[in-house]
Image 1 (tube, helix red, strand yellow):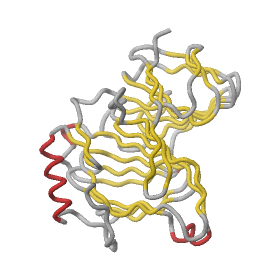
Image 2 (cartoon, one colour; image 1 turned 60 degrees about the horizontal axis):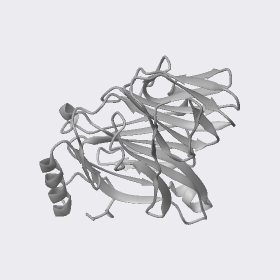
Image 3 (cartoon, one colour; image 1 turned 60 degrees about the vertical axis):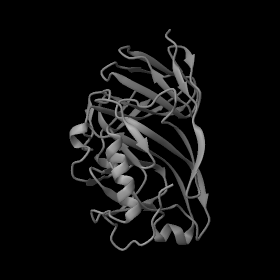
Length: 286
């Protein structure tokens, strides 16, 4: 049994929302195109309170927001204005410059709400880093789903388990939600060179090695591995092809060239950036 790389996430807080962040890490900078992974922990907001991530910029990446519970309002500088619910995919490609906000919708803010979900960033291939921005919303019922012998798999993005998601990823990608009943097994194929598992809940074993809940476990390349559910389990599997070169990350910017990051920082600080219609507040450079 090969030694697994286990990344224990650090606890953070984003605009009042507690999160766990295993990526990026000193142990692992990326898994396939995934360079950032936030687990938004289950949180209840009383009436008048909620998430409010003000206007902020991105370059060189795509964001994918996926909720288990609650609702968020996505608005961006392309003019998109979309309410995102549980099981939906909110996909935004930044290209050369985009700004967006995510907040609790007005109705949920008034009555109080709960939130639990994941947000990941996928680095764009070099040929798309400075391309146009894009936004698309994919309702839960549009995503491929399989239910076989106590194992449920929903393909959030990319390809895997003989399914293809409609989300317009820019490079070979694997992003799947897995729910397993006690004593079931799942063969994780080696079709994607890089893969990692994040256990949300339950007791799982990979080739008889116990996995730590709420830790990211990086799988060895080129090996098909068997996942066993010692209890009812809820996991996500991420991966894909290796990046086409190293990436630099600074605040909300991802790029293959440090010069692009410096340029983006200068532009945002000077107010030379696309703005979200109807939005005034913004997050300043750290």
